[in-house]
Picture 1 (tube, rainbow, N blue to C red):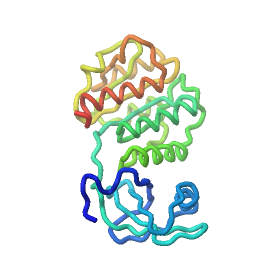
Picture 2 (cartoon, helix red, strand yellow):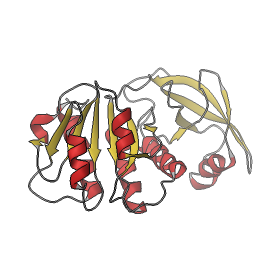
Picture 3 (cartoon, rainbow, N blue to C red):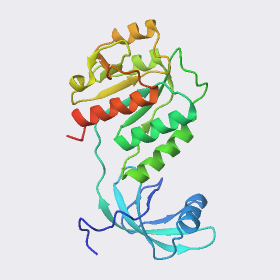
Picture 4 (tube, rainbow, N blue to C red):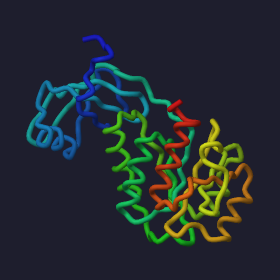
Length: 246
């Protein structure tokens, strides 16, 4: 059936495949994926689904072989080309696990291109489990229709992150002490949004950030926001004013 606005139906399951996809490719699923499709979704031979590899767009595939522990997909045709997202990095101070998981999920759904955990003086998390965060980003991308996964950077101390940021990438710093209103500060172009931990940045950290080239302190309104809420608010405003919601 030729691709039309109503085909393939949006209700088809979507699955991330960590290998290059192409027309007529055969894909052997791992046991977890086979179990999910066969035992959770109750799909069998002949069932259709949408798959993406993070690079080549989205593809229509069909289950060509299914057994108790194995499943093979036959890739039939491309349904969408590779996704283009704004060049927006989200640099965030990790908070407690549940809130960080939620933060990564929502930032993926909103279209952030890269996620970078930044360790500050008041960060209370001892360790960031990148594999867990990658799994959450994959699940979010599967649900929201993204065909590219956000890049996930290694956790960096704040000073190291600032050193590594390219000079042409504008740094929007969510400063709880005040700054330009986010609604008027954001502009198109390579950007990074930096948000802090519960308790905020220290005075020394705030001064260091403000001293950086192309660093713009921004305000997210008159109310005190939780760290994960600040992330959601900042990325949403950026996408609406300078990203791909325009």
